[in-house]
Image (tube, rainbow, N blue to C red; front, top):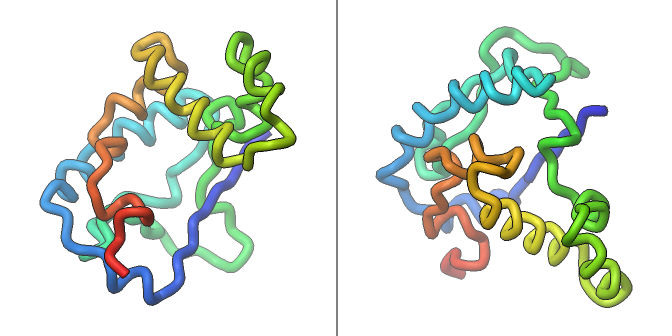
Length: 146
C-alpha cells in the first residue's frame, strides 16, 4: 500500500520564509534518496528536486503531467503515521496508554525521535542521515516570524 502526504501552506506563510544557504546541498541529496525510495517499492520518477527560491527545496514535474497523474508514491513502510507509531514493537506498548489524550502529531514526533535514536538500524536511516533531513530554522513553522 502506498501513502501520499502533501503539505500545503497558505500564501502568507511563504513570505515569512528566508533563503536557505544549504538549499543546493539539499537539492543534490535528493537523487540518492529517490533511488532509495524506488528500491523500497516507491516511485518518484515523475518529479525532481529543485531550488524553490525562498522556500527551500521543492519538487517539480520532470515531464508533462495531466490532472489525475500520480506524481510520486511512497511505500507505507517508509511513512510514519500515528497508527504506525502505535504498532511499533516496543514503542507502541507505551504510546497506547496516551492514545486518548495526545494528538496524532505527538505520536509521529515520538516515533520519529525513536527512528533517529535507532540510527543506522532504522529503516529510515538513508533519509535521516541525508542532507534533506538537516533542518533549518525556516523549515519549522513554529519558528517562522509572524
